[in-house]
Image 1 (cartoon, rainbow, N blue to C red):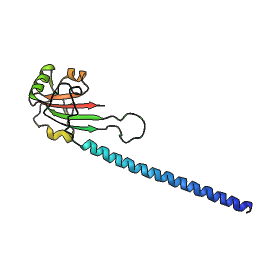
Image 2: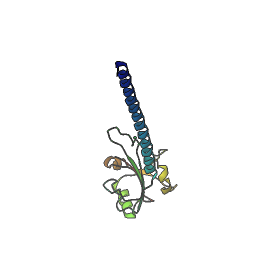
Image 3: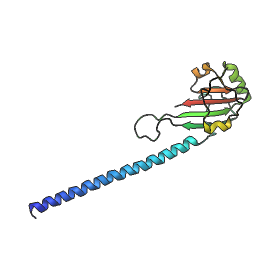
Image 4: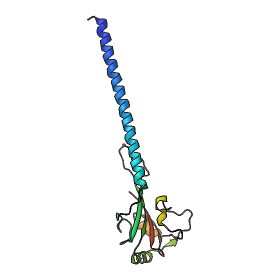
Length: 167
């Protein structure tokens, strides 16, 4: 084998290796894009789901007691599918129908002022709006919000509480 044929063979082998490496990188990039799309679809489905489990307690939302019913959702304001290190924030909103005794106790424990802002400070998320009657009269308490993990709006006449909390 002469020097020239050896050089051609080496160049051909290097070319094949480079071509395979580029193809592998392209394949990985396409596979990651598919995983990202799958993740985004899963996150969207999770955000759209209205939950009714009793995850929320008086430690999370003071004064809710042994509530009669709850409907809540989660939202991921940051990109939940990112593989970059760091926290993924989650925001939660819930509509809680309080037991009458708990609603009375909560109404007595804080000064509640009518919400006159439009839109209100806590706008009801579309997925939860079916659980809030149109005649609701929200009230706010800065003292409540200052001492709690969650921000709330409360209608004591309907024993209805709307909360928003973040992780």
